[in-house]
Image (cartoon, rainbow, N blue to C red; front, side, top):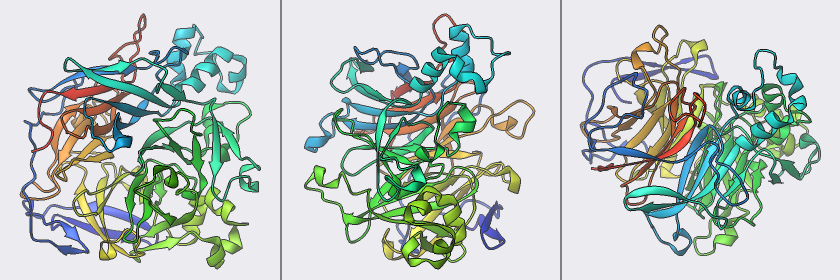
Length: 533
């Protein structure tokens, strides 16, 4: 364990993660199979770090610039479909990806749209917010329409033209998945009593982060399990939401799917890798205080030579929950676990109520497990624990998991604290993660600062690069600061690592809606300097 950090446990299922300083940062070694490799490559930042600021703009280091590619409400095709709200996940697919290419100047981007912002839509529609009650939302069809069209995700065609990234407005690829889209259910819960017999559901919402598959599709994660009460939408079945959705950006005729085998909870993201024997593993966090860390291991092996052969690979397999005390993955398998048999009707019931099933078998309760990513060099797994004020943990930390024998299929692991949020490190509330090719970890933050609350010293949410090896191991370098009131989300680098895509989510007044004063969420491209050194 990093000598600056230590881990203590409170109880048998709740991990309280506490950081302490014992001097300067040590020179780190990559961990593989739980042992130091001894290489200690000197990873470092290729830019001059910026300082915290309240400035109402996307602030970048000298030499870097940004351009807005698409904003909420912008038309993306001739059908009149519009770019959604609350942009979150960004996944870039080179336009030639299916031919094995790495085009870094033209591609398709999947963007998540996490939630609607009805107060803004009321301003657009002239609805008196003071007298509005969400229970009567059905009486406001125009508002309900805007809310349903704001969520889900967008596929957009983008191209760099004369050095600037542009939205290519066309009907070949550009399309929306929103609150009205028919979506197939797959896996054990499909057609089951647990989901009311549904084989198809309507719409996706709460789309937070996600990831990409090894066969070039997007995974979009629904980050809520109680939408009916949260949104007030009529005729709502909560069990139809809270799943991982798969979208093929290259084929608009391919059915959109929600994979019930991956469980139902507040999915933050989905990080995909392979076991030593070639099966697919997907790591997932449940973004809520005192919830768990999961992985899914497919029954079927990945076929690198046949893309179509992988389209059902997430429909059958085993969902596991992490027990940090035992350093074991525990299978949520109804057929093999008496505790699950005594509390749940069948496997569909287990997966639909994965949170309760995870706790029943001893899953460790954590402090808001959000984004998780796999290190490109050593295969260790990094998990953001954003915060948990109930535990006095306001600043969060990032945990590094080491699979036993270097195998993501193993039931055993070890772990340590990679970096702890707070004054020692200078970051707080880590959320989305992204690795560059050298193994540097890009981290964005998720909090709401005011001038007199616990986050006042951190000012606007930022973007950081943190080396995972060498003399700067675990030391955050701030790359960006977002506009007031926003989260900067969804970091994703092009294959040549010369463009960094980011989303600016729910800014207060920055990038205002035409004719209005409220800000618009948007997708931006950052360029001008190197992102990898």
